[in-house]
Amino acid sequence: MNVLNFDSKLCERTRRQLDAYLSNELLVETTSEVVRHLESCKGCAEELESRMRVRAALRRAALRQLPPPHLAPSIHQRLRRAQPALWLRLRSTTWAWGLAAALALVAVGAAGQRLLALRHSRQMVRNILALGVEDHIDCALRGHNYPDVARSQDELRRRLGPECAGLLPVVEEELPGFQVLEAHICSLPDDPRKYVHFIARGEGVILSVILTRRDGESLPAGRLLAADASAKLYEAHLSDMDVAGFESRNYFGFVVSALGQDRVLQIARNLAPPVRSMLDQSSSATAAPHNVSNLSAEASRL
Amino acid sequence: MGADVAVFSQSKNRLEEFESTAIPHLPDLYRTAKFLVRDSAEAEDLVQETFLEGWRSFHRFQPVSNCRAWLFTILFHRIHHLRRRQLKTPRTESFEHPAETDSLAAAPPLPQEIRDEDILAALDNLPPEFREVVIMADVQEFSYKETAEALKIPLGTVMSRLSRARKLLRRELTAVARGYGIGPGESKSGEGRAR
Image 1: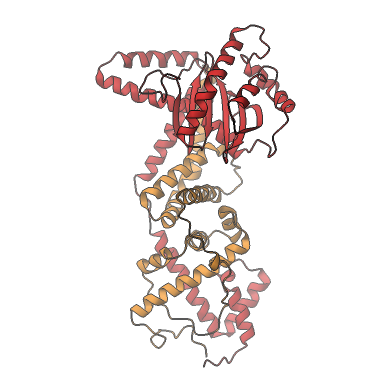
Image 2: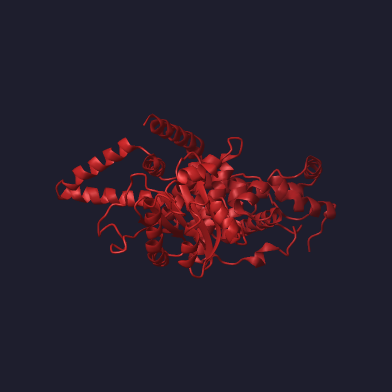
């Protein structure tokens, strides 16, 4: 049987505080009390020393684990590769013509060049689909720019503005099982591009339907690029999100969620034809009631 | 076109600013990820994704705030997301409220020299919830508050998990000491023996 010949209550209290003392988390007064006790109690001092040894050994061993040398360059490269998406978002006619010319040159090249073009086109699809994913993540997921209870129809229409309000019933009808919580026009920081953004909840996830002007960009055609060539639908898995994209005469449309590629593609397959049709009708009609051809003006008003 | 060049140049400068602020924390992020997911390739992916996500939301980062803590918050968000997806998270409620108190009885002896492989093996044997707290507090030397914020758990949980994790580490090392034939009588300083 161990016999304690010191103030066991004080020792108990000190040992309860040793973890916080070790982490430098005690108040100044408490630290002084602990230090005073440690100076006079060999048992507690040894207990502290033992805990410090383990902590120091753990830190020393852990810090010897170094990242592989290729990791930093690889991260630099990936960050740099993220840059072209910014380029694609720039409204530069000159640049767009340059890209078109470059693609044309590649397309008429040899087989190797065609492979290169295919890879480039795939990247282009991903860059365009990334527009929708970025807005979904930034506005809906991180920004949480939607209410827990769906806004009223009047409020949703008001937020969309007269030019875009007509899209609301179309989107709602093609999203059975989902409730449209929010609809607005938004943009990403430091980026002039505007997005018409519908945020819906259903099947346990948040789903975005996003429209944005093409500004001269196009989803490259080709059976090897489209997920559904007949419906002209494209898909990708980016930043843990599944995105399906389509285009109308002037707009890109995206369905973004974490529902899985098949489900997102299925939703886009239903949604794309009526949305496409409405967008094309609106942009060709000069005085259509739901003209969405001038989102920039509408967005700047908002 | 001039405006386009200006926008691109601005974003390039921002990328350089992000890299100079964030990349120095790469070793800490990598070793944390490695200890938690135990797989080098997966740890590399997590760290890469952390930096990409950090870059995407860099416009929200306040220069006065702690970049290191911010990056760790992103990393843990991704690690927890990965765990949820893999459905591998073992539940460890029984460890949350340790019944034992800080006993005054003889603390078991530790090996005189704690070898790296022994302490890392002991760390590896900890339940993930304890491992992440002990890495944050003892390896990365974050405060309780910063640890709680990064892991999204209450401060009291950080304290109880850290205390329990340290005890478990010592228990593991004691087992190693026994393996070396070190018993209470052989302990160099007689440490932990109640008098």
